[in-house]
Image (cartoon, rainbow over the protein chains, first blue to last red):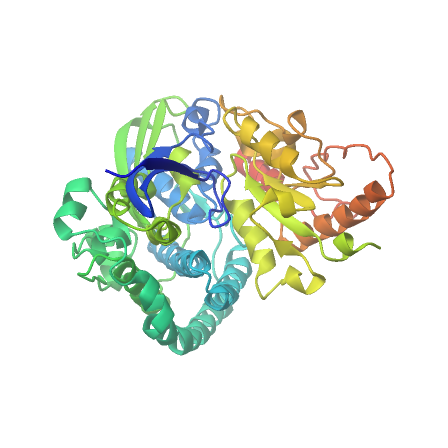
Length: 359
Length: 173
């Protein structure tokens, strides 16, 4: 056995926008084991539900993570609506779907850029983020903010999209589709990208199932599991197609996310076409009593909120299981055997969101 | 103006932030805002950097890393703190694992409040930092930045009201 060295990867590392440390046990250039060290972004926000009332916590849930912010607040609201037996108006369900899917496009573009950055393909990074600005501008025009939309509330949404706004969404979606048609095939067929991703960081279907992978990581290993299938919000009416791959490597995860971006655009189109008229929220009275497990599909996979109320205006307990947490165990299974230079690519391929994970 | 304030190199460290400020900061580097046209370059190594961009409210585990990153930067150096969390803890102010304030750990030269600030505001903060960098190079001792004041209702003087304040206001309503 050759000599083992431990190389710290992070917490401050050029490819990581967020701090997490992986202690990589190396044998020459090969990784033998990866030991994660966490706690750099733990804020302890779950405890804050005891201090802020359940309506204020919508904004708190939104700030669990700055990338899938809107989807966090929707999960929280859906949970409370279930406890309090509130039925939200149809238009609110459709608006949640539209903002949610637009958010997914921005999240996947962000990820594609960061992945390209991790193997030094600055051109793709810049191009993906240029397209992403179109999405953020759309969010700002429809919701009023680029990142923290602040449009969710218990009982529906706080802001409507006018008919001109819907037409604007369709125009932007068409423009995005044109951009994707130009650069996604180039990215997926690029020789150097294939060299860095095909066969790298393999996760078999069995491993993915055993380790509890969620979201695009599971779907790239051939597990067709997506919580949107259950038809929450307006997904039942709008319908969607699960994108899966079977190879389970970084390239397959890239293909799944690229396919999902197209699927998101189609869903937004169908949702705008089927948009019902009517109110956007219903008044909610009283305080929550009871407990619920709310689940929803985020760009990174399935998120689970456990909420418990005891009749007071503050919740008794909030617990969040985020998709990146579920994908950390598969990540640690992907790393052994890879070369040191592939570590950033493999880490980025699960689309890690440490802020979510540590809360 | 010296070369480093014409082309400042920036190192970024996320101290307990929710990611919102961080991705907006990265957005500044990309074609829409493109700070590289001013020569501003994002580097991974603090030893190459002139400006340290910090986001988030700092937790107990981050303190050592933040001090290390700051200590490794060569003089003169400027710290730009993005987001309302860096001055008060923002929405997380009451959390148990919050140090609450970057200036408790390292001196801050420019605060850019809001939750998260717009990329334009971030670029503005970095441009302010360039002036401070230049004066530090000339040997001036610069005082630390005053903390931003929370304005609940935007006035004509303070048009750029923090989004967090607005959100909190609407949340209370």
